[in-house]
Length: 419
Ligand code: SAH
Ligand code: TYD
Image (cartoon, rainbow, N blue to C red; front, side, top):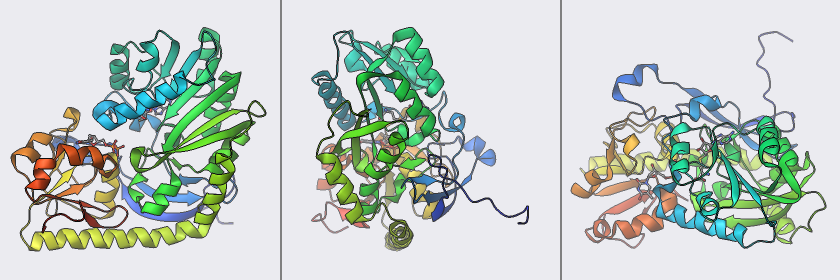
């Protein structure tokens, strides 16, 4: 074999061969909103997706380093959306009212961000600790009375927590396990940290929804994994942790909550085999599904581009709605620049005055959208549409329309006035 031959990528969990199934080209960091003066040194990496027949894990072939993505200017704040605040309040109540908490429980959360979930435990004076590497969001969590350990969670962190606090009744993680390439290390940490009757409860964007909705914008640097029940059973099974319950969630455009325990501690609910069967029917445990997915996303790209070109030809004004990390994938994959989309409005102050990663579309405050309603709003925060629809009732009643690519390129609301 020539020493110049490219190495076959390996599955991060099973170390088996990874077959590349999607290639989206060069991309910047999903949350890499950039000052106009800094664009010359912008970082790009090849965004491609692999599938392991062994673990059934859908994963990025290359991922930038954790420090490049999660740092003291991390621009994602969990509490920006009312819907997410409600969701995490319910999440907290479901744990607080569960059978899993002992008399003086310890609750651990990985990736606690601004404290949106853990604050419900802190306010009840329950023993808790959040692990969060991004300084700026960790500071907000501390302001809510949350105890935060500034770090990237791994097996070593589990040992630190064990010696300072003892073992955990519940380990929670939302939209973060899918970010961590060293998943085996994290799971070993869970195994060490969890009480004999303790549970891990985590949720992440669900692969089944991504495939059903062609929501390929869930593919970006931070999402190194897109989980399914199949891959979760495999990955946690390596550490003798078993999947005992699953529950679909509406967040992030379709997520799944997974509950895991030490093997044999609890009887798994019927929901687990039911979901496994459903996944096999959908084909998300099979390579061919993801090869077909490439064609679907190419069609989505063509449809979105031609609609934007048509709007331009007809002299319609267009603005992006929500400078989400998902938008970075759409803008770069669909090669959308300011000639088709002059600006994106967003409610996050740290993003204002910056440019979108890669395609350099200006990010403006939401007030800009309110002052000057565009004919069409390209909906990047489509997962928050219910909330946005009620907030923008004036825009809609004045004839404004939202353009989305999910599950195919179309206008919302569908019965609205002439665009
Ligand atoms: N749980 C919140 C935040 C999700 S964003 C929510 O669901 O809205 C992911 C968060 O995880 C970021 O704040 C990021 O800094 C943090 N994170 C990334 N890698 C991590 C790791 N290895 N350990 C702990 N937190 C991590
Ligand atoms: P989200 O889908 O959580 O982002 P991501 O794809 O990065 O996970 O959306 C959060 C972003 O959307 C954040 O930048 C704020 C913005 N946003 C608005 O601008 N207006 C809104 O009404 C909502 C709900 C979000």
